[in-house]
Image (cartoon, rainbow, N blue to C red):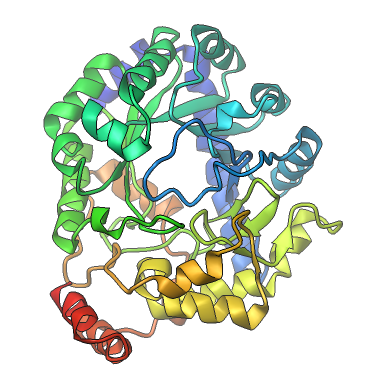
Amino acid sequence: MYLRMAKRLLLETDKRLLWKLFWNMGVRGLRSVQRHKKRLKQGDFFPPFLYISLINSCNLRCQGCWVDVAAKQQKIEPAAMHRMLNEAKEMGNSFFGILGGEPFMHPELLDVLAEHPDAYFQIFTNGHFITDEVAKRMRKLGNITPLISVEGTEIISDERRGKADVLSQTMQGLQYCLDNKVMTGVCTSLCKTNFEDLLTDEWVDRLIEMGVLYTWYHVYRPVGPDACPDLALTPEQQRKARQFVVDIRATKPIVVVDAYYDADGKALCPAATGFTHHISPWGDIEPCPIIQFAKESIHDERPLREVFNESEFLHDFRQTAAESTRGCIVLERPDLLLELAERHGAKDSTARGTIYEEVAALKSQSSQYHPGFEIPERSWAYRIAKRICFNDFGAYSRHFKFENWQDVVTDSEQRADQDGPDQLMQIKSH
């Protein structure tokens, strides 16, 4: 499998792009993690990776979207982007995730990224704005990998994304990237309506045949003004998804990304461990994209390193999240998240101004944390990579208070008593 993957990398993408990936994301990305570890030992903090939502606008209206895509357009201007990227690079960072809205609706997107050839950018996109010309420019720049979202079959895609003919336009954008030998990935937000269609060997084999080099299965998070909790996966489906990813990594020549587990299959949250935080289109610094509370901004006059290092809100979030669960605090303990935001007087960083009410209305449910059901990596390459670069960085050993699943259930039952018998039965079933 490893030889087949190496052959694909050498034959199915531009060699210059492969070198950019190896150097900017691989070598320099590893160095950014090592600097992060060193900072933690010294009592300092700056996340080694940043996710940046540089525009709120989008041409789609996806179920469960938390972004204010219908609000007046707000984007991070080039000058602010350059300042942020340069200050992050000074701290050793070299990899940045670019989100939206739809990033390609930002008119200066590629011009901005072109000014940072020493960094590597992963653009989360629906693919609708990727033309042959855009794909050719990404290949010329060499420091961009588009991660194109496919949310199901044609019918399911239209339903999930609130518009007709979504899948065909997405696949056309994907094909432009592949035709131009751009290093391209496909991601899916796994939910109940696409679970059986896309979490399959047949779908992964099709991606490989097309020339897609990596895939990423996110787990649907029911948040935002129209959360659609009925789409959320059951605990059994989440474990099945984890097993599928572990097996595919060990058997098929395609890279599979995940953001929720370490090498031993233990759950983790990248925001709780300090691995990454998020920048909104308004420049607000949030723990992660679905947590729309903020106290600081990239527009602060202080250097970015000071903003991150001195943020009591972000520090308290990491500690609170790590003390409560190895999973997602938004899903499991929205009450704690709300209490944290109120305690710090965090502002609502949405345009709609309803985030406090939205979080107050969330009910506790299962996330990726399933003690006793850990599924370790089968692939030695992923085990090594995760032990070096993607682990909890000691966050849970410093703070985590639960020793076993019964402790989690007991704690959840105490909270659920206030919500009634239906909520209690839901937690016990998890």
